[in-house]
Each structure stands twice: as structure tokens, then as C-alpha cells.
Length: 224
Image (cartoon, rainbow, N blue to C red):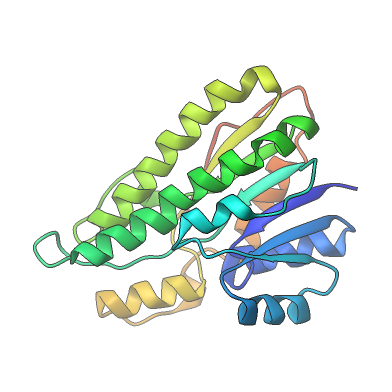
């Protein structure tokens, strides 16, 4: 039985991934941003352990009580706030860089002893914006480009400890975040036009279940 630490289990890709892992009998430790949200997650995903820490305040991650061994850490949480550089506020920049980059770095550092103990896998659910920045996406794309850099450095550093690191780059996926993006872009939203979250979850599970003789460093999933 494997043990996984997962962020973003409240909706979208993270929620579906948590359901799939529980269904197959794995142990889950989920991160909730508040005690109220923790209560909701325990009801939605019975059997999972839920700990409270807000990714918007990475200092709070330092006090987390984590298992002694983790087979994986999956970073599926994130936030997006679009706008041109001329209009984006300092707060918009700080929030996205904090949630999408600084918090994953801090949480990974906290989890590394447990990941090393199990020779586990770190999966960073990035974005197509982590490879190319379109107009209006500067802050979000910068945070995701940084997340790729974090993964690349971490992979090289932790190879000697047996920890594998994968960056997953999904294109537009039919999640609540995508609905928000379309609203910010002023476009109609048709979930059927984009990747099914289950497809991305299948990719994550493939990475987690990969035999020990190989690693997937980067994986891109695009809509047809």
C-alpha cells in the first residue's frame, strides 16, 4: 500500500486523483487551506488524512506533521489571475508566485526526508503556460516557468537519494480553473472542447506506477 501527499484535492484534477488513489486502497494525506475546508475534505474523501496549511502562507507549512515515508508528493493545487503586465497588481503577482511556486518548494523541502525514505516520486502538475507565455498570462506563466526550474534542479539534486521528479504539462483541461480562465478571457466555456480531467489523472497514475528502472522527467498532454 502506497502513501501519497496531495495538494489541490478540493477540485479538478486533484479531487479526481484523490478519489482514484483511495479507490485502489492507497493511503492519502491531503492539504486543506483551513479547518472548514479540512472538514469538507474529510466528508468528501472518507479515509483520507487531512492536514491544515494554506499555500498562500508557506511559512505555515513548516509545522506540518507528515508521515515518516511517502511514496509520492503530488502538487496539483494552483491559482490563476490573468491580465496584461500593464494592469496586473503587485498582489496578483505575489499571490500567484507564492501559491504556484514558493509553496510547492517549501512543501517539497518538508517532505523530502519521507520521500527519500520511500524512494518516492514528486509530481508537479504544471501547465502549458510553464513552457510558453501567451499575452495576458505573464504572472501565471512566470510562476509555472519557475515551477519547471524547481523540478529540474530538484531532479538532479535528489537522483542520488532515489527520488524521481516529473513535470506534467497539461493543456487546457475542463476544470473549475478553466471556467475561471474563460471568464477572465471573456470567452464562452465549453468543457467538451478541452481535456477531460480523467485523462490527466491517468497520466499522473502512470507516472506514480512506473517501475523503478525508469523515470519520466517531463510529460505534455494536449487537447486534440
